[in-house]
Length: 127
Image (cartoon, rainbow, N blue to C red):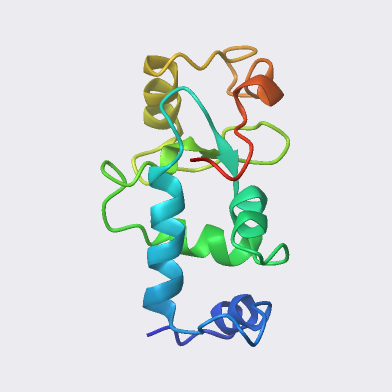
């Protein structure tokens, strides 16, 4: 159960017709992550929009932060909307390594951003 005011603010952006069950929302987000193929990335906002809740990017971030199995549910494929790497449960170095192993190229060694970000960013819906 989510008890913080921040988390409640995140859930408040969901429309009333969306089931406000945190487990259901998490399941939907995790299902979306499983659709992102190796060598592609998406953003928190992309996931929120694909779920029909464009203002829920922070909620998506919160859900990914709590991902119980980041190896099987590939949250390393979620980056910032500007192409910057962002965080990861096992550290940004590991995240970069995983993405590079999948064929993602980076613009430099400072983790500044993905090279040709828009080319590796997926479009929703993914079938």
